[in-house]
Length: 500
Ligand SMILES: *[C@@H]1O[C@H](CO)[C@@H](O)[C@H](O)[C@H]1NC(C)=O
Ligand SMILES: *[C@@H]1O[C@H](CO)[C@@H](O)[C@H](O)[C@H]1NC(C)=O
View (tube, protein in one colour):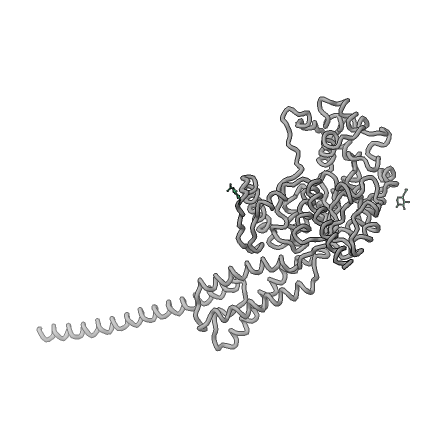
């Protein structure tokens, strides 16, 4: 019994042993299966992540496997293509820089990135996630900065200063740029207006360059005429204009020419409509014109179609334009060819960032404080909002047909240009932030301090001094005076050196 019992036990133990052995095998097999599945899965995930998230080309895994290397090259190529596609969108910006130069610089940039990555990832085969992320972030930032510094700084700018379209702020920006670099600004001997009622320029009224050279910057009021301006500016100068929603523009002009530079016929109209001049003008425009039969078709009027007049719509065609759309079309197409950028002051910051990119300027160059913006007393007759209804709007639109055609033509072009720009929103919000900081600093009257703005992907570091604040808040006339006296002194020295 004992024996049998023992035997049974022995047999049982061996069965048990066998069973255990089998189970261990199974567990081991299962374990192996799970491990290998995990490896395959991990490898798969790794590859997917790498191709989907990690933009910059570079050897993340280095191995002797030629197939893998070939795959990596393919991956890098597709990434390069992607990056190139993003950057080539700037080429759609007509005339924005030399395309070949941009492409070349892109390639160079990509090459330096390619060169950098393997160096940072030795020893080969190691995957340091943080390092890789750092390189990626750095690379992308560098890419952003680079992509907007591709245009070398442009210093010749012909700016058509359209009346009452925030153009004084643009003028201030251009004059500061000219001051900082001793550029030659095309200026009258006196005052700040080159001409006002027609495109002719009287050379005797203009400051002449002592060496008979051409000028760099135009930003005074002028009735634009490319042929006439050709005598003073190189063809390569970038032509820029700014326009504004026509009703806003006209009402702003009405206010300005009734209060700051009063004009007789406008004052007469105000006299008739003292209660609400805006309503008076919108409902009875004839009261504000010297020749009521020519409302809205009066060339050189300050309160209707002035933007088209400033941009050179032929005086003779003002009346005909009401019936002849071909004349307007020809005008708009010509402007579109002659001007590389028509900015929209209703999108002022967008306009400045676009301008910066087009001209290869810096953030400091385009920062501004509002100048010439009217501060209104709440009791002023001018603080009233005009009454608008569809009939009034329709009448105003028909009266200001030229300016509306102009605005409706260039607004979508502008918005499209903005849309085509890579990283535009990012740079715009950075610009707004920096502008806010600078505005607060300048308003605080920190006369002995400077504000340091640190470098960012959008701009090198720079500082703002009290003098910068002062220039930014200087009004048109005084600003022109500062630039003119500096320029005249420079010319005097130049003449002296020419004599000696
Ligand atoms: C309209 O203007 C165009 C261009 O100036 C001119 O060729 C055409 O004859 C004009 N049409 C009418 C009906 O006057
Ligand atoms: C600014 O600097 C001037 C001279 O350097 C000094 O006289 C003046 O007290 C300073 N003002 C302030 C507010 O620090």
